[in-house]
Length: 298
Length: 150
Image (cartoon, rainbow over all chains, first blue to last red; front, side, top):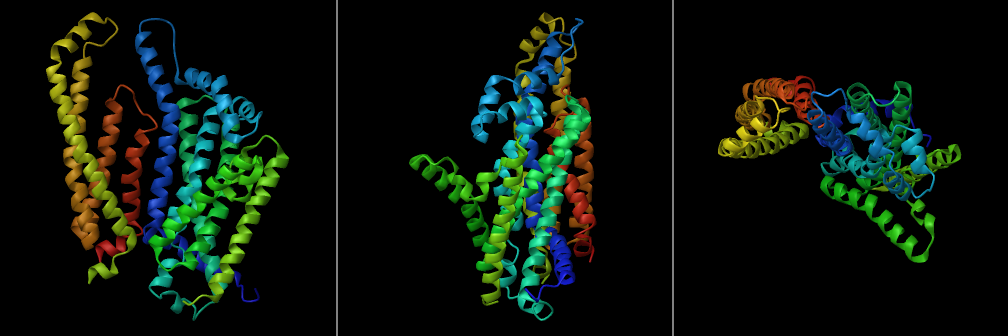
């Protein structure tokens, strides 16, 4: 760790962030994240808007006025939605908190996105080192800096790119909800969006570190992408099954995806424990990754 | 030789262009079938307009105008997507840079016009139609400008 140089890491991070767009993986991740978030949002918003438009046309000529927000509030705060959210988050009182105390529409969109983001992030971070290991390009960089700086720099660059994408995604959703629908008070919406962006970013951290680890272990970018997607999804699925089989509820917490909803919890202790766990997972994957990268043939 | 110097991002943009072009070609077929169906259901639509007092008299005309507008926009945009995609792959200034910019600007303009005249107005799904042209506009004028103009 004596070889770590902040200046080197920062330069590599900046170049890697710019290079993400040039090599295509960044473009795919950016488009996938934005289009997926808009599709998820439209699944919640479009039916309400369509119903409101239908009601508006049938009430034309009368004094009654109907807005999409009337339907959104009714659907979002129904007992069915609260039960569904309780089941998803696996905590009894969270449905009430997420749908009644916080902007329900944003909460629903954020919950679905928190499930999808670990997989989407793989598209933006699968090729941190594997492509350059394959074409022997890293050898030229090793003349100028140490392996650990290279590894951490590319990890930091991917994080910065991911953060930018998350901010763009959340900004688009919040602006639409605030300007077009105008259902919730402005401050509440923006504060909840900010917490959502932090939740998105935190769930991305261990996944990016895991992708760094896989990317430095394999010298084919496509193989790295397939493995990243499999390794992010399969363990959580297996742990869930095993947890149900042996009746241990928190077995899925052994993998980062088991902590995905904790950052939106009403309890500050749960938020702190979740944040600490996600950062600990990130540190563990990073440590293993650096160890592998320092020993492997480049 | 140019293939060796082509950044992966431009290849990705070209592939996405071809996918979007295929979607546009499909929408041309669907819209053409819709127009035939609307004309075939002429009597029913006239009846609906006559029976329902709240429905605007121009109900049928609106549908036909919007479908024609969407069809025209798809017919113009699909070839531009294919041509600019080839331009990105071959790193050509006119085919890639100029036609790419023309596609992005035309796509944004036609989407805006279509949304303005749609009875539903601007919806969250409409944002998707702006995302790719805006990304193209941004990328070919900044990140890939040197590669395409060279």
